[in-house]
Image (spheres, rainbow, N blue to C red):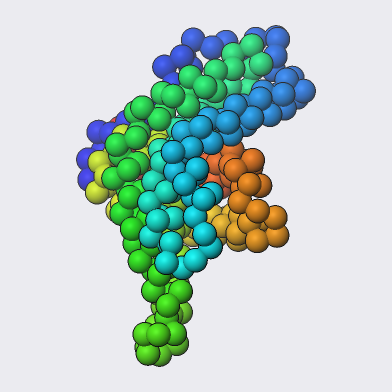
Length: 240
């Protein structure tokens, strides 16, 4: 794996004055965060809209699971743009450009993210259909448990891959290797992401998918913060 790959950084960062006396207090930082999350949430929904509209029209039937996976394809690049925007956000209310950061991350990462996201959705779609119709397969119950564990591992690896692709310029096959590697190298990240999935699923069950849409940017912020140990290792050991 090449070490020449550099982290994707915001080119404007070197021109900021960290000692600026305006817009750096606690209230300003909180305001900047809320503003960034609101803008990013709207942009996620807009970017994923081509898939969300037909998804809302699908009936809750297991036969529609492959279509659900297809509808979620635009969500991958949308989440990638959000990861980039949140990771490179400014805490200074005088220097807030979340929409520009989102667009920059989306354009830079769309191809790389789709190379990871589409196979992941395809695999999860097959796993979901298999589990939904497992009773008709005649296989022993432990096969269902094994399939569920593999699907969970694939999802956690996919979350790692989404963050890596959004913030680093690695090749797709290297991203897949790193995503799997960090499931074991940084188990705290995998555990945190698993908890994030549980909370997300709980919100969907208790309320509705609409709540997930309204909290999409909060999910991304949690994902980025949970992934910080992995990002630190990547910067220290895998970038030039």
